[in-house]
Length: 85
Image (tube, rainbow, N blue to C red; front, side, top):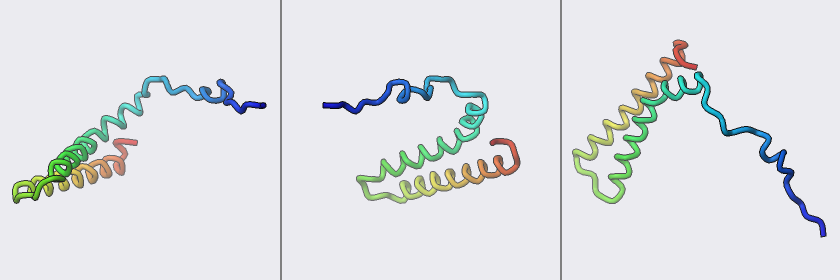
């Protein structure tokens, strides 16, 4: 009987245990406001899953959606102007 096994060197040839570069950290810092806005929108949507939204809930949802759109536009403008890569 012959066994098919992965060669250990081939499986672990790519090194994933490294620190992010300065450019990667800059990119993360640039995208952080958008990530925060998306997390806030997700929080609102989760809160509204099991209830009928009131007027206040609807306003909170619209505000979170508007913030995500504003952050996406701001990030696109920064990338277009050359501030971020």
